[in-house]
Image (cartoon, rainbow, N blue to C red):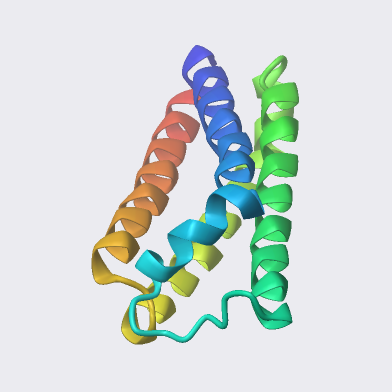
Length: 132
């Protein structure tokens, strides 16, 4: 169960760090590089809406991260509920990254994020199998 506990803490901390990275003042300057060639309308209200939407993504991930860290106190009790939440989150965000890469997002960044999704899923499945 120690591997499960460590995984839950590591993913929880990673998810909380996503909130920090998606904070509008940090995130706004990164978007033009993330979406090259896309008119982002910086300085317009629509750009603020985009930043707010990304902030909500960060808040959602941070909420899952807090619950993962809390659940890591008793991983045997909480992993059956928490692991599927992480797997579904990573799968859905992975699909979004594939879509973004096909149309808008810088390919290198999309590939990095896809690798992160795969790492979280594969290591999660691995510790789950070892814990059962």
